[in-house]
Image 1 (cartoon, helix red, strand yellow):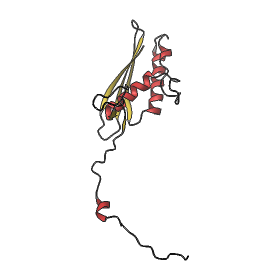
Image 2: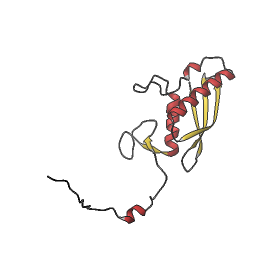
Image 3: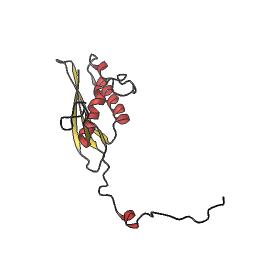
Image 4: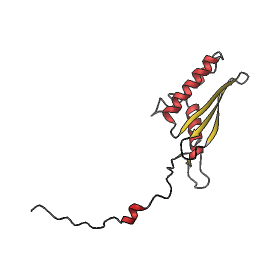
Length: 150
């Protein structure tokens, strides 16, 4: 048993393979569609989403989930229902915006908030939220996400 001094290489990578560029430089992120429902096309229980629809569903899910509802992630969500019966003033709206922005920055990847509007409907005891969001991908798609907390 001696030391091997010469090493033979088998299957050297082609130089042509290393020169080729990828077909698409755009990184696509996939996730589950929200709300979870049976997919009619594939007869499965989960649908796959990308881009705008994925981010929109994630934002709705984040805002409508109260902190502590997720078993393995108790910090996920926004505690917005506590604001429903508070006096409606600018301080309250700023607190709601701060809660949403902190949770958004922690849990939503691939998007930024351009505008955040918070209003209330006294007759129905609900808070109406509209986020104007821009995707961070090459497309830079801008869209609105309306959410109602009641």
